[in-house]
Amino acid sequence: MSKTGTGSEIEKSVRFYGRRQGHALRPRRRQLMETVLPRLRIVVPPDQETLDFDRLFGMQKSEYWMEIGFGSGEHIASLAERYPDIGFIGCEPFVNGVAALMSSIEERNLTNIRVFDDDVNKLFASLPDARLQRIYLPYADPWPKTRHHRRRMVQPETLNTFSRMLKDQGEFRFASDHMPYVQWTLAHVTDNPDFKWLAGAADDWRVRPVDSIETRYENKARSRGAKCVYLQFRRVARSM
Ligand SMILES: C[S@@+](CC[C@H](N)C(=O)[O-])C[C@H]1O[C@@H](n2cnc3c(N)ncnc32)[C@H](O)[C@@H]1O
Image (cartoon, rainbow, N blue to C red):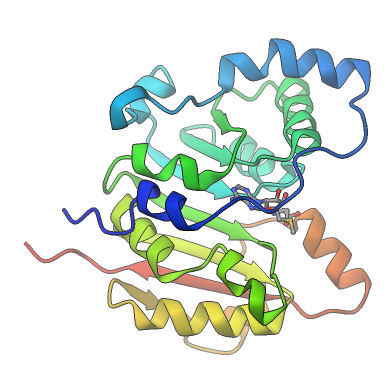
């Protein structure tokens, strides 16, 4: 299988521009970062070795889903609670967000989430081919200025990486309230022959999929009257 657009290629051209830390963590959250996170943390294996998901979760899960930029983790935690047989891989470099997720994991006794607490671009090269059933990218930073568009998560190389990591018929789900980023994503994904946009009618992109929940950013966007768009793409089956 092609390894075009692997993490190592992307890493060369992309630097992380987001925030790593906000306010100081409260003592309880600081403690969770020291006790819970080390058990759940995904570490990039040495020598470009590929991560074994079954080993990562200590058992074979029915499917593996990934969320990039989980923010405070409400979305990934709710999905993990709703689908205990699925293994969730969450990626988020913002320490306060990771600490918030640790708190949800502990409160709800979730055992099916593993966390990469760094820039997801550093992880891509270690992720296996055709193992993910879903990739979620909810409300990624839109980087509205033209000179910053290279910082957007959706890039041709990243889509090649998503294509490599998704199983046949797997899904890439994107949501945003920033229409230029929505158009950018539609244009780039529909340019990639490995993906098919699943929308048949307007409600398919105007209404949140029934099996997703509102994220914190979506809630903020809606409260200021913004419209949100949900794009679902299917990874087409590989030819034999
Ligand atoms: C606008 S926030 C949205 C958070 C959350 N998805 C939501 O909807 O509430 C975008 C998130 O993506 C994260 N992010 C940005 N670049 C990232 C990267 N390279 N790898 C992983 N996460 C990233 C940011 O730290 C931030 O938490």
